[in-house]
Image 1 (cartoon, rainbow, N blue to C red):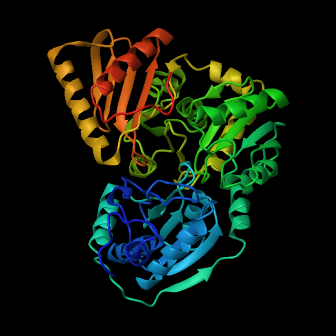
Image 2: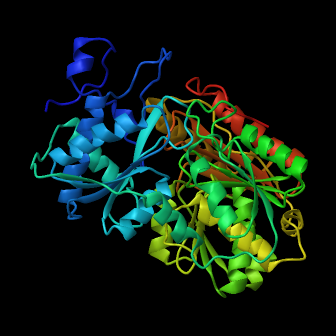
Image 3: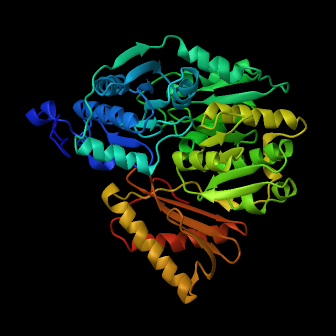
Length: 505
């Protein structure tokens, strides 16, 4: 096979005969490309021949990593995901992979299959919560981990250089009824004694075929919201960080008098939470609540959280009393998952809603349904308190949603490097920022800057979309939160490459 093209025009000879693979689709810990859909006028970043090349590259890499030929594949519910998967499978087989196809799946179902089917590697075709038209692949070769930057760089080089090992000898097996096997495993030994009424919102994504049954089988009364599969996502993208989805869950919780509302993303590895009073609890605060519950059951628990997360993991008096320890680490499901394994932490929490539970709670990978079950367990262990009351027990802070201004993939990292250098210069000169002295700065992943009063803000590059990520929080007031956002936004506005936000304060 020839080296892939970086761009090609649809309905051209080149597009129909050559692999198209835009290099920016290889991201820090998974792959995402704009594939397109009928009616879209945006140029595709990958074609099916390009997906086949990706499969050959992945099959080559897992052999070189010593993982062996066996690999699980699955696909999410989009109009083109089956075609993407079959193109990927053909490439994997050409490179000698023995494919175990579990069909329509959630990402955590594919991770579970690595254990249940004794296959070291995984390739899950999904664009997660990205808009219709996006595709991607989440990959791993050492369960329960997924690829990090080193593996993604190696894969990128193999594919773009066409450095393939076309060993042949591949095989294909479709695994029937694996969905039921996964669901049975999730609910095995789980029974919630407290009578809970829960809203299960799936944004018409893949989780709609899983979440209602799981929650009913553990003893919950389930109110389904947007659980019918519809890959046009008619109401909103299945993204539990999106305020539109959270507002829809809030309205349904209040309408039905539910005890809690759960929102699952497109591939089911994330879970958002709305309390019984309609309060939309950001995932990092849900993490603090679960950390309180878990550390009460397991003394001296260790946790990992990402740099976008609340400062309460370090300051919460209950976590301190329980002897809990928390490590702040790089944002990204692969980064947090790997750090949880390295530190043998009992759990890891990411502000985006990726939660990772090690034994005895989970197997180390992110599963939105395991998160929902953990929340139900927490409510079961606190029968006299509502979700809203458990939330109010936390020290109050004023936090923002994740806000993402557009910035091209080719430019976003350079912009962040300049922002980091500018803010480091301010710190080193003793200058104030957002009206106060700079008390602390963390640059492990972008820059997280903290004022003397504990108000902090973060700017980093998104790992899977052409945008930046901005988060702010203050333990003091709404005004101080807005001061920090205004200061960070002023820094970003000096860079013309930074565009409009998807949502803002």
